[in-house]
Length: 184
Image (cartoon, rainbow, N blue to C red; front, side):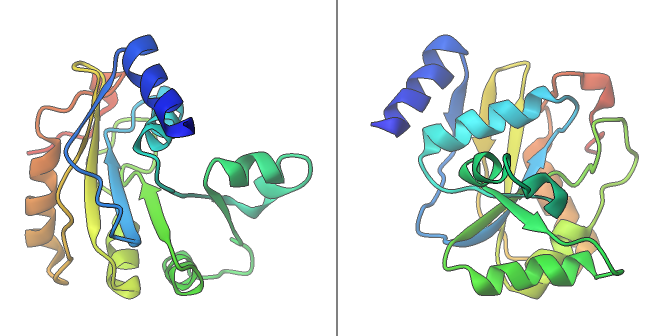
C-alpha cells in the first residue's frame, strides 16, 4: 500500500517516472547516483526509493542521528557513520556491508552540488572492498526520469570501469545543469 502511494505521488503529483529495473534480488550494492546539482536531489531520491519499494540507504555523520532526529533519519534509510579518530571511511563503510543482510547504499560520486571536474572514487573502492556491484542511477530533471542501470561488478581497473559506468549518465541533466559533472 505504501509503495503504491509513493508511486502515485512520484508519477501523478510530481510528474516523474522510473526507467530500468531495480533488482530486489541484489541485497547489497552501491548505487552511483548522478548528477547531484541541487538539494532537490535528496527528496526526489527518497520518494523514488518509496516508489521502488525497496530499502536504499544513505550514510550521514553520526551526529545527525542523535535524539530526536535518530528515528526520522533511520526511517529514511540513513545509517550513521563515525568519522572521528581518523578512521578510513572506505574501510568503515565496507564494514557496514558485513553487518547487514541487506544494504544498498546510494552515493553521489560528485561529492558536492557544485561543479566538479573529477569524480570522487570512494564509492568505487567501497564496492571493491565490500565485493558488491555498482548500480548506476541517473536523476534527469529535464525529462523527469530516474533511470536504474544494470549492475556492474568493478574489476579493479578504475579507468576502464569509469568509461563503462559513465555511459549511463550521458544526457542526464541535473536540476542545475551547469553544476553537473561533464560525462565525456
